[in-house]
Image 1 (cartoon, one colour):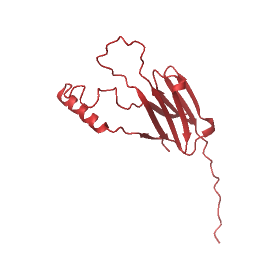
Image 2 (spheres, one colour):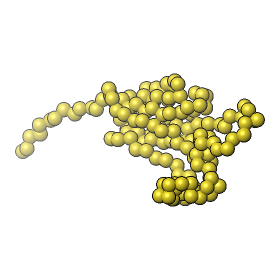
Image 3 (cartoon, helix red, strand yellow):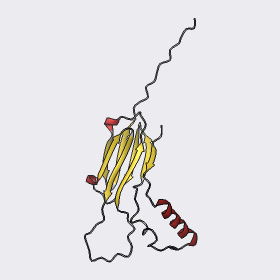
Image 4 (cartoon, helix red, strand yellow):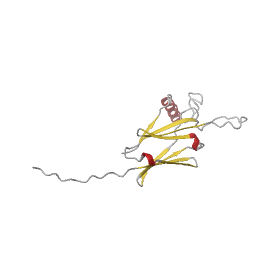
Length: 152
């Protein structure tokens, strides 16, 4: 069974997509930065996740640059593996005069439906260099022995 991906939708997602399409069609910033949101700042963000199956386990790798492991929460509950956390905007130098901020900030949540044949107690997470790697072992399939049944 494959892992299914679910995303929480943002309220203005379709309008932001429309704005991006207009910009792409006309080759310029048609509406300007003040039309809904400056791109990449107020929008909900979702860290990209790679998922692969290898050596009897699922391996998920999430890009979480700028976060500490204390900022990340991972939970496996009711067949869903959920990653959540928050990336806060840095306020170290108040003398900088920003003209545009493209890095996304705020909270995120990603949920993945996992198959029933995973070893829930053996899920393992490592966070290193901005990459969260989750290893979800798969139980070996129980092979049932064929039984001949006599017909009377």
